[in-house]
Image 1 (cartoon, rainbow, N blue to C red):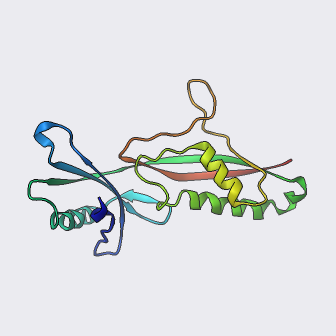
Image 2: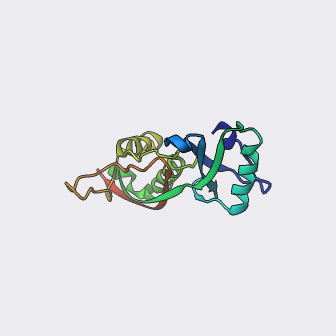
Image 3: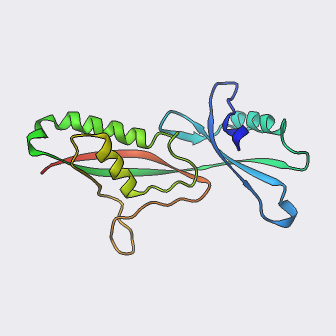
Length: 176
């Protein structure tokens, strides 16, 4: 996986990868390399055919003779967030500035370098990051991630071959 993580295509694009060895007896030497190609700092996309072919050639140069490498498409799970931040009432005239700082913090949190395959979205980690990054924010909360079972806010978990990616973000400001 370390070699796959260092791969740069002939077009200069890089990817995000994870590798899994199959557990069946007859296919124990098959390594599935799940890959997504970076579209930007915060966006991943399905890897192009040429990217996957170049990566396979790159990996086959150093693989063990008995191993078989298979390039597989990773899955992007998009996440829409509605976030409410609480600020002191006397800061409400600076609402747009505070929103911009908060948006920057959220985009840094979801930077594709910070999120790996299988990483869950943990509400407390996210709100703590916003609260810590933006000095004027007293409190941050996510409003739209209710579980179907008990109607309480819920973390988001994904499979080992999936990556969470921010889709839309709405930031509401409340004076306290």
